[in-house]
Length: 282
Image 1 (tube, rainbow, N blue to C red):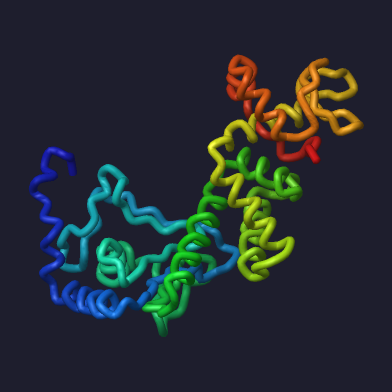
Image 2: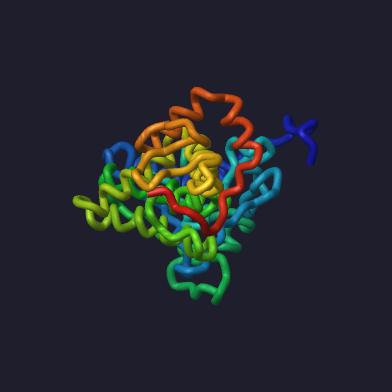
């Protein structure tokens, strides 16, 4: 339906249903008591990574009331490859939670308590009202956000992250994504030591505004030829060079060089295509 009739949609009508009133009562009780509860969607099959995107302009409840306006995608409902989570104690999350329980199109991919999951299908098990601390809720939501990012990245970025985390780039993309996701999970399980340090390292690079520079830098280093002293490369003594010019002794020095040489950066970026296998900077 076109945006010309947007004014005809009543996105408040569903709030008058008995189902929403019941959900809101649960929310109000939690909020008033300062309690936290999550509605979590967890993949039914661990190795079957696939999200669920609803392309309808409007998501409706079983009474055909419009609930979520998806035409701009700013407010849409989607389930990432590793699931989704919303907080029952947050009023802004209620429309999504309401759709989980009362929208037919959303429920097609969900498995509720007592139901059996279909084999080899992208279904998500609903865990209702998992009470926990605010710290747990925020941590759980962060885990889902970052692991979903890993499983939606293009292969070039996946290869970059694998090289950055010293993991193989020669595996199929899904396995490389699984390896990166495991780094994140291990950091959560082992909250101290090397595992947590690796998780923080992965998070830092994923958050970095310099992500594009890192991708270009690693691609250029994979393409460079140290023997011929052409392109970007690392010498046997650990020095990074661009042709005959010395850059420095770290990957960050290469990033600094690219930031100071826009013409070089733009030229490399136009041809960025990280190889699945190749020289791996140390």
